Length: 333
Image 1 (cartoon, helix red, strand yellow):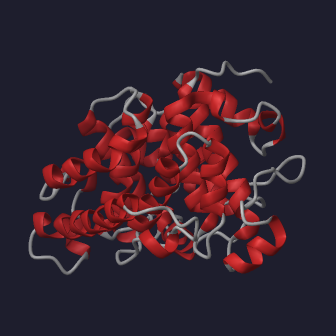
Image 2: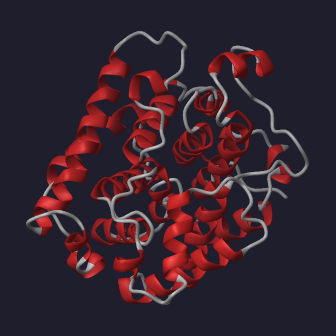
């Protein structure tokens, strides 16, 4: 399988899968144990043929196929396709990669035919909301549509406003990088987005989701999420302004189990290692936190910035779901 090195959608989708595969065996390990197994540079080689991924890549593919099949990018067109893809994932025998409980709980409720605003886990802001949003950031759409799609796909399972905001910011980061924004400029641009969107509730995409939370108004509901993401970005700025001690990035920007922490810590890895793409993945995988999700998002960011040239050519044939990643990225590129 030969994919032109300049293709940025391919670089981003494959990068997500590569990071996921590198972080899969280190999840739930301490940094000391990771270092004993892989050395202080962390894992830098794919293992297995195919190299297996987790639910992070599986659900990103579900989002990508829903977007691919949608006749138009509206809530009415996309929501049923997302629901169907998520339910197919939940029922698949390949859904055996330690999937998140929020996704499983929400899918169980979606399978009953409930409106998604009732099926979602309203208090969850886990990184399952944004680990799968990369395909949204690779679409050629306006920013309002990008924001709506990112929040919708998150909201089907994760109803906390921070999950929505972090998903929009993750997709926006991919969108900016694919357009040529340098990685070091991302934190500032994302902070600007936080300030612009702080009280924007997208009713046409979210319906009455805000009423599931203990919020007085839609604007008060979304502000909680943007404020938490703003705090995460401030921690990121502080971490990037200090010398890099080479340690666990989760100590600085969060362990990544929550959506805003996964975004900030993945960005830390991507920015710190912008000139060493595999190093960005290894840094994300060398953490006591949610290593597969952090490394996956770091791969999505670096791949969107540098295209397939970022990755070892021999990895393309070995990654699980390579055929789907190639087919989807071909349409996006």
